[in-house]
Length: 375
Ligand SMILES: *[C@@H]1O[C@H](CO)[C@@H](O)[C@H](O)[C@H]1NC(C)=O
Ligand SMILES: *[C@@H]1O[C@H](CO)[C@@H](O)[C@H](O)[C@H]1NC(C)=O
Ligand SMILES: *[C@@H]1O[C@H](CO)[C@@H](O)[C@H](O)[C@H]1NC(C)=O
Ligand SMILES: *[C@@H]1O[C@H](CO)[C@@H](O)[C@H](O)[C@H]1NC(C)=O
Ligand SMILES: *[C@@H]1O[C@H](CO)[C@@H](O)[C@H](O)[C@H]1NC(C)=O
Image 1: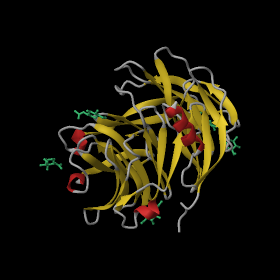
Image 2: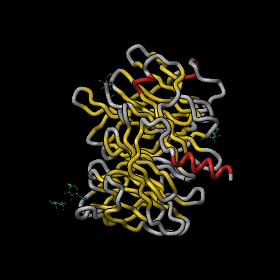
Image 3: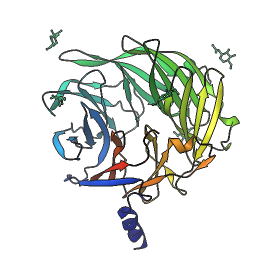
Image 4: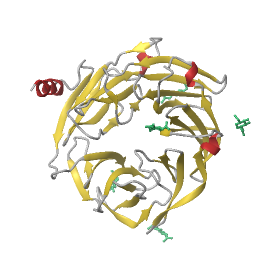
């Protein structure tokens, strides 16, 4: 009873400090066992993926259209991304059993808010482990495994598509280290000398953060340099294990990033490639003793770090990058967003200061962030 009461109270107070105003909460009429699993954005429209449907949403969270996803026994279609160069969605279906290759489907735009299966399903032979994240830049599809980041090339013609292996694997050999236990990765593009460059950060469970420099050659990512940030020499406990490194900004000479740990806090750092120095800004305090959950999101000055307790309730810490850079060593969140007990969080921005998050098993909530704009 006590738990239920607390939950209700938390739930009513979506945003604790009123720097976030939530105006719409939309409940969906899901089938039994239907569960929200992922989100992507295509052609300026949001896509909500559940374990049985692709929903196309407008900015008021209304369903414009829905498409049933393939039913394959023992598989769950749980990751969706948008191809940056085509009006194509890629849907990954992963087996519940270990060691079975995921299957990928493509959906192609076919009129306003219409998408239809395109070409043949692709069995992803190279992928041995289930993944939580995939990213496409240009034609390159990046998928993390514990000992490498696979880089595949998407080849798309008018009526078919396939995945091609590349000669680049971002693995221990490429990084010149003896072993890797990759927990997450992030990629950020910037332009240098009219050429698209990429900075990739890879978080390693014990060894901190590796960086990779890459360029884009005919829309394919080509890595050419790498190194490691010496995180351990800083403010981080020796026992800390690393969960993710999220890039907030990157230029030719700098990388501003958040390093997230499993049980300790998260940390804001900037690395200068000119001076080869790592600068520590601040510690982003965690929410109580709750567990790090899902992925960190950011947009302009807003940084959102989700936590979950044993009842699966989710609290999202919101930090303002402006205040993190003002020489405060330890920073408490500016605000909190709270959701009911859920298995997967989805959280995305629909404009510079408006976001949508999953607030219940079958609901999304839209909020406006106040005071996170540039000064
Ligand atoms: C993409 O957006 C444009 C402009 O709003 C629209 O004309 C077009 O039909 C959209 N395509 C799809 C597949 O929704
Ligand atoms: C692909 O489709 C475009 C537009 O419909 C057409 O102009 C082009 O000739 C097609 N290419 C091939 C190889 O069929
Ligand atoms: C790889 O690492 C070893 C041992 O740290 C070092 O001696 C060697 O110079 C490195 N090789 C390259 C190409 O960086
Ligand atoms: C590798 O990382 C995972 C977390 O992704 C962790 O649970 C596991 O213990 C790590 N393995 C080793 C050998 O450190
Ligand atoms: C990234 O940093 C550069 C150089 O400091 C700055 O000009 C740019 O506005 C920053 N971009 C973002 C998105 O913060």
